[in-house]
Length: 484
Ligand code: UDP
Image 1: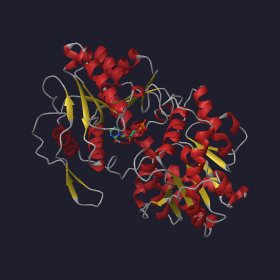
Image 2: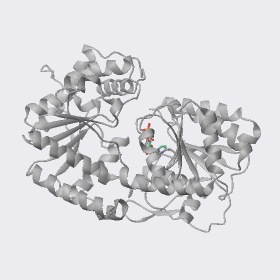
Image 3: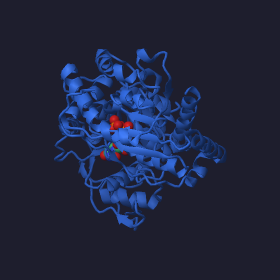
Image 4: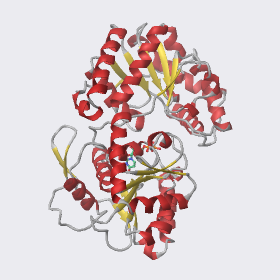
């Protein structure tokens, strides 16, 4: 660590994670797994004794990791485990470095900047300035789970303190290139000090950890969140109608949903929609992809495959759904990619253009946005995730949880989620004909699609919700305590 730091200390923020009741999971994962969860949790409580299981990341809000940590830490607490969550503080120069590492670990050049001595000094300085508070909170014998590149430099100092330290990367690529190697060269001195590391997939594990303790733990979704909570079909329709994605008006239902605090809330805002002609009827089959406006999600491929195959051979419509790009100053790429989609849409033959809509959802209220995504995923007869590359692809698990058959690219974590021909269809990422053929195949066979959707729900319930995730953490704690 940089001993010369004269800048003020940074105060990590403890993120409140009230205990969450766990009982709702019993019908979701079945009595046997639920009993196993309770038993392993009781063992974990015993193994930890009066020690704490800390999670440390770099943000309390925004992004998939923060979204996962709230529920998971809450459920762990609901099971009696003293789990806590801290978010370290950073500065723009620090986040520029960590974002660079993030992009490189995905195999992408990012801003093309350096990762040399100067960047290491910035990185270590910020972590050193977070350390005083961490040292006051974390005790020898505690277990610390550090998340992602911004926290890797804490492994050594927290180990020196007597904590058991695990570092988890939520990022990775199936095809590591020299950019990935560059990021690992930066992180290696920190990461190799960890007692254990956790990755989403085997292909994401760097070679230098070949003999280290490595566990593979994929992400999970929270079935009780605004994004995934059950919505009645009538509510789903009413929301799709309010958004303007479908038109009819005969539902008679208000687009209301219970808010996080239990009070009734209502969707009043429409989406921004690019479409030619009237909105489809709520009864028209709708294919949906929900994604950030990112080239790696291949939105233009989704459109072209649909236009070339599904328009003439089915009566389906397509909605490409993403966050609003208006005035999103920190994501210029989002607006750029959306404009590329718009160009591609304008060049579609008019029959196809009438069946494809570009939908941007308001982002002013994240709970509202989540309910909108929830409703559109539920309204879809087929959900698509045609990414060219994908770390995990939470949208796949989200759609599976909602009993939707998913057509996904056979890349990264999507391959771990979709069981081909059982819970959906896997297609080669670059093969638009295969993707278009898969669309027609599922749209032509509603019964088969429904059966796949049912199997998808069962798989998501068991494999991609909190209990599986918590059981894997409990097994890791058991291993760490056995080793130590
Ligand atoms: N998402 C959202 N609103 C949108 C678009 C996406 O809430 O308008 C969510 C989506 O439901 C999922 C997450 O953003 O929970 C995207 O995660 P994923 O792993 O699929 O891809 P990433 O964006 O991390 O590459």
